[in-house]
Image 1: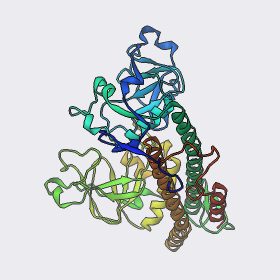
Image 2: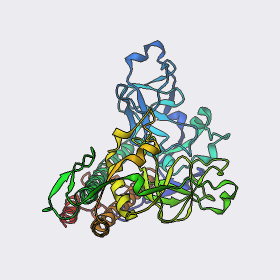
Image 3: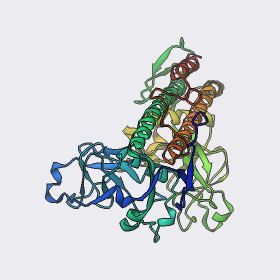
Length: 450
């Protein structure tokens, strides 16, 4: 994608394990020549400092008043951070999404991180270079121990390429401009996805609670989260539509496919290339049959998806609740509860700190029920209506992935000297790589209108 950019005229070989050559006029130095270790502990003055966090979006300020996540009871071991300091997480590197950040603010950060002030270099150039290393997890040769730690001494002895200062500044200006355009593109695409998902939710919710005929006479449902429903619909209870399974796999668990409830539905888990945590024993898992409905009836507000319709036979954690659908169209009931899940509408049924819905309470809950033929019509309408939206969401997500890959590649090629940006004009844009956002918005508006 960077075929518009040209390489330097002359290169020389390096001994760096992750970089075979650099422009011939670049220096090879050690981190200690451009970084000074800081370890200024805040002590009992911690209340005066803004709490900072190292994230994929950079170093950000944490909101202590509306706190999410865990916080220590004592911040006295935290360390100070100044503007333009580089912050590194030099442990658990492969498992940590982002291990380097450049601070744009003063504050304090966990003492587990390593903080450096920058000397004799442009801080942003060093940040972009270390971001390149982090994105490709290239520092593996420096790891020690099970926690994949890089000692501070080892890190400071590590060699890096360094262009002349004027050239560093040009590299930074170029990357700042290009990344701003790319990030704007990604932000617009994510906004499109949000709009599309909202449209999809509205289609599902309207169909499963109001039906397809807008002129039909309505009546109160007496269901808090539903409101009015078509007059000819029934009101029933889950116990008349759902049959509790609760069949434990026991010692035969090896015969079953392991399933997982996700935002993409109920999917099989890959045990051979496993990601995430698994129990040492699956004997307490329960059977799931094709067309069963699976619910997570606890931690509901914090769980991204609490209902799924299985297209597979297998087993799933015994913490979930599995039902066989009876006397109803299973897809209609799935879309009804998917609509409620998207709005987290079942709050009146929660009990306790973990926001649990007891099985008995869930089975007593009322449900609006159209005639079976109308249920099938509603399901057909939903699936036809959302298929175009789902396809557009998939394409848009893929565009985000591709431009993010390009962003990573661009940073790598520029900071390692594979391409020369010294004479690139500041308003230079690679038009074929970044589609016009306004045209994309028009395309999505057509989808929404359709």
